[in-house]
Image (tube, rainbow, N blue to C red; front, side):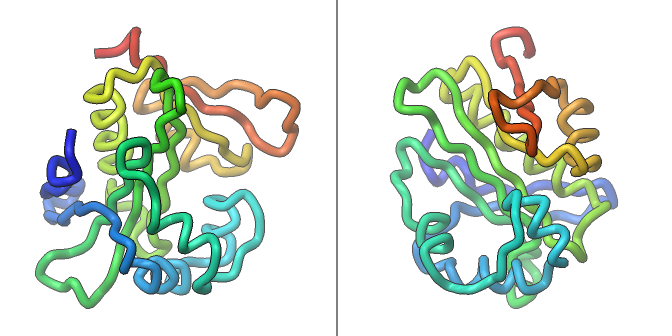
Length: 177
């Protein structure tokens, strides 16, 4: 799978088509703007603590990475690219190459459209294409929408090892088609 394989159209529940494209080093400001257009609570649920959207080490980490082990894409409306990123998804592959960790964020004003579910499906497809055995993530227990989506997509909710502030979500890709 190459970065060009990530670029595709995705269709939301309401029939609207968005474009998914790889995140690039020059996207730091677009990610900050997405954060500015999200509620503080949505940012806390995504980053597991309070954050303020601004350029810095986090945006550098989110835009400058090894594309062999780290896949990341942003969804936007192709007819209105000036509206910015509506959602992002990433998959970081372990050094051993057998599992990955994922993260998804949907901009607050874009929730309820099925975008999170579409991004989850794309990410699980990337993981299967890479031959990963499992994908996992850390989620705050109060993030009910993410936990519902994980269950709906076939994932399991498990206790975190030693971290009582999050739960671990896991997709066993060996047992699903």
